[in-house]
Length: 211
Image (cartoon, rainbow, N blue to C red; front, side, top):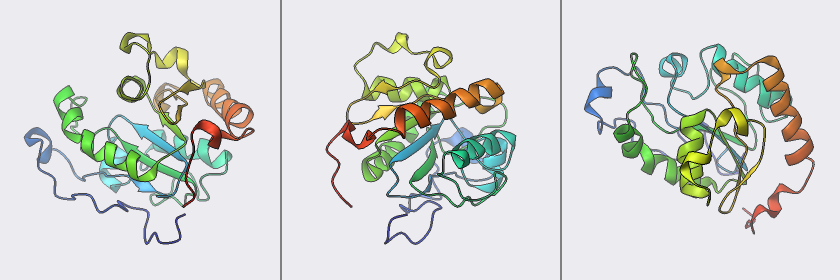
């Protein structure tokens, strides 16, 4: 955790009353900005808040999907609290989403993703991560298109799960949606992180300045 960081929840003080998407303002319970260590070298990006995250206001909390993601990163040494914690104790890790509000009946529209893009771009710029974990196809497509040189139609989280994709200044390690992950998938992600990311000097991805 950054020595000057006061709290994990929305540490960059982003707009907590955003009303840029009319269709979401009345349907959301919370506006869910990023959460975690602002000095983290690992950034986890999902598509949109789940019902659990909408209720708690914290990414990847409040339901079984969030618990699965937290448990995976706990096994890797990034989460020091129980998987069902609604305010996880994290280190070297930041959780966030492409979009910040949940519609209970549908996925985010492309327009809503584009409207929220400045929030995510600001978090990426300020955190300056070494490794980004896109969770699900939507997050993988958005990040890979913006930050790699591959063609947009070449990405598939089923094929890319638990692999490393070279990005512009960092690496992507895609993860399937937690609800779609089997135990074998979760084990494969842990194994890839341990053997191919954490076992080497991933900081060589770019010339990172000391904080």
